[in-house]
Image 1 (spheres, rainbow, N blue to C red):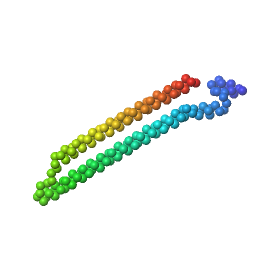
Image 2: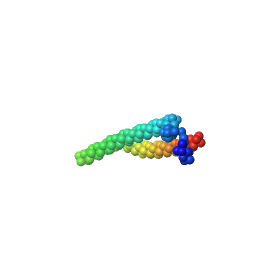
Image 3: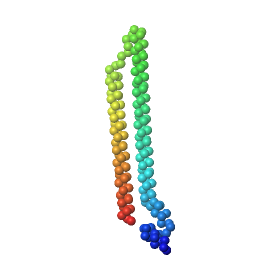
Image 4: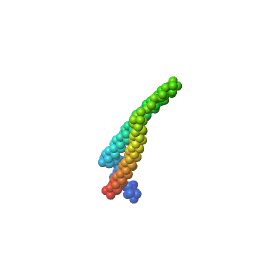
Length: 148
């Protein structure tokens, strides 16, 4: 039993050879908490991914509308050039259409600003979640130390 005396001197437990294996295995509560935490993180990541995909879809839809508008503008210019070469007066855009186009551009600028604000807010929320997780982990560690 000389070996066990030296183990006691160095602070090793005399619970037998299975003590190190048991101490390495996570406690069931902690493992469940870790699994729940990973699930929550995965759900959050999936939600962020869906949100990014939705933003991309909205951006593509907007780009499509802008391209259609530009094609319309080019067609109007082509028609104008054809008429001017033929000696006819060029087609005129009515003031209402011009004002609606300006309003659409303003709304688009506002939408882009709001999307940026939403993205910035989500980043702040994610950072706060990380801080809360770190605090929770630290408290768990402190409680574990107190229990021992």
